Image (cartoon, rainbow, N blue to C red; front, side, top):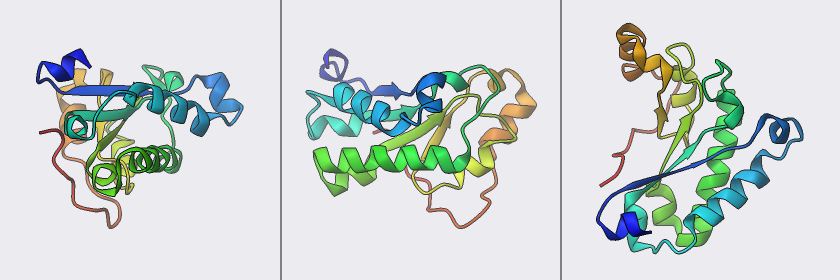
Length: 150
């Protein structure tokens, strides 16, 4: 909260461990983390908050959630935000996917309705791969990409 009070934007990262994933606890773990992370954030301050779903088991491992799994979690997050702050804030809040995003996985991820962007780690070390990521191609009919944070 002190960061927001200073006029800065924040990114709240949430995600489950591999054990939690295998036990099918993804939705409930992310819900708990999201509600705790947003506690005390006012509706007015939500314009400076972005959410990143970054499964712990995918960070730097080369494993990436399927686009469908990532979409399910993003949809849950958007629903929670809508429940806490209303539909307008729910639809405007940027929710990104992180966790071994690559030039091979970005198209499918970015084609999902509730995925607004990606966090890129190791793949950004290669100019060629990073260029491919930022110039992703939409696979299907995806909504127009929205602005990130004010």
